[in-house]
Image (tube, rainbow, N blue to C red):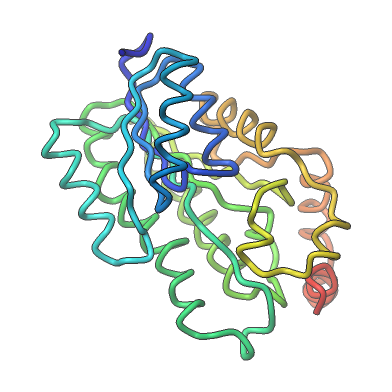
Length: 261
C-alpha cells in the first residue's frame, strides 16, 4: 500500500501515548510511516491498524534507544533499504519520580541516553539529508517541564529543557532551508508516563490532563505551520507565562510542591 503523498516519517516511541497518536495523525495525511519502539507486538498492531484504516505503507523497526548503538543501527538499516526520512519525530522518552539522591543513578543515566543523547544523535544522522533535499523537518517532543526546574524529577525536567533549547536553536539555524524544527511541549497528558516514572498515583490523578490525541493533533498542526515551539492547552501556556514572570526561588518551590517534594 502507498500513501497519498511521498513523505516518509520516522517516529520513535510510537507504540503508545503521544507517539501512537502522532502516527495516526501522519497516517491520516497519507504519509509513509516507520515506527520504532521496544514493544514489537504493540508496534505491529498499530501498523496493521493504520494500514487497514488509512491505506498507507507502514513498517516497524523494534529498537531500544537506551542502548548507545541504536540510533546508528536505525540509520544504517534505513540506508540499506534505500529509505530517505523526510520527517523525524523524536517522541521516545521517560521520567523518574523522586529525589535525585534517592533514585538509582543507572536509571537517571539511561534517561539522559534516551531523552537527550539518542534524540540528538538521530537528528544529527537524518537532518543533513533533509537539508540537502531542502524539505522535511524534525518534531521533538519536549514538555512544559522544559520551562522550569523540577525538584522531584530533576533529571527529567533538565532533559526536556535541553530538548527545547536544542530545538529552538535548530529552528533558527534552519531558517531559509525549507526544513523546520518544532518542540512540542505538552503538560500533563493521559498516557502511561506516570506509571513508568513510578509517580505517586494520587498526585497523578489530581492533575488536569489533556488526551494524547489532542496533544498530538496540536503538535502536528504546529509542525505543519513551522512553529518552533508548540504548547498545547491554554492552561499550560498560562503556567509558562506565570513561571517566566515569577521569582526563580518561588518557581522552584512551587514546582517541587507540584511534584510532591
